[in-house]
Amino acid sequence: DAGVIQSPRHEVTEMGQEVTLRCKPISGHDYLFWYRQTMMRGLELLIYFNNNVPIDDSGMPEDRFSAKMPNASFSTLKIQPSEPRDSAVYFCASSRTEYNSPLHFGNGTRLTVT
Amino acid sequence: EDQVTQSPEALRLQEGESSSLNCSYTVSGLRGLFWYRQDPGKGPEFLFTLYSAGEEKEKERLKATLTKKESFLHITAPKPEDSATYLCAVQAVGSQGNLIFGKGTKLSVKP
Image 1 (cartoon, rainbow over the protein chains, first blue to last red):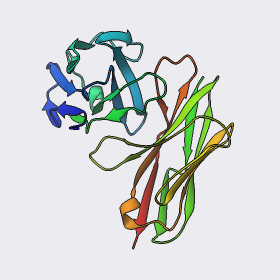
Image 2: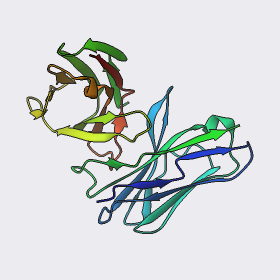
Image 3: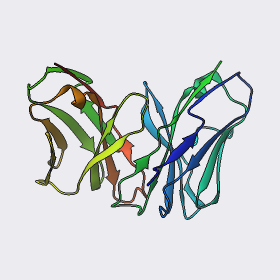
Image 4: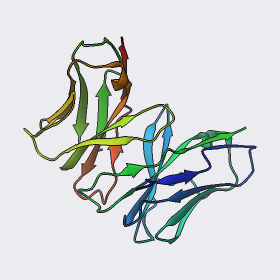
C-alpha cells in the first residue's frame, strides 16, 4: 500500500501565478478530501469527492480555487491567480467510507506565494 | 457551531513522565472522535476512533478515552519517539464526512 501520494512536496510561486497541486488516493478508496493547514486556523476542509463527484465545496475560500477528480486515481487542486495569503500546507486524504473509516493523509504540499 | 478545542497547546515531558492531553468538543451530535499523530513535514497519521462515551482504545503507550464533552489521550511512560503534534477531530451527525480538527497539542519528550 503506497498510501496517498501528493505532488509536488514544495511549491514556491509568485503572486498572480497559477498553481496546481496533485493527489493520487489509495486504491479502492471512494472518498477524497482536500484540506489546508495553517498555524492560525489549523486543518480546514476545502472540498471532498465521492466516486469522483464533488459533494461539498463550501470550504473553498474563493472562486480562485477549483478542484477536479477526472478519475478514481487522480485529483487536482488549482489556485488561479495565487495570492500570498494562500501560503499553507495543502493535504489530500482518502477513505473507504464516509462515516466510520478514518481518513488517510498524504504528506502534503507546502505552498509559498511571494 | 461545531467546535474542537485542544489543550495544552504545547507540553514538555521528561522521558517516563506520564501525562494527558485534552480535547473538548461541541457538536450537535457526535458520530465519531478521531485522534491523529502528526510529525514535522508529514501528514496526520490515524491513531484511534472513539464512538460513544465510556469507550477506551489503547495502542502501545497511548490510551484514548471519551466522555460526552471531551476526550483524553493518556501517554504512559513516554519516550522521545512519542514527540509529535497530536490532533483531535470530530465527525458530527449529518456532517457528510467532514472532520472538524482542533489545532493540536505539540508534545516534546526529552531523554
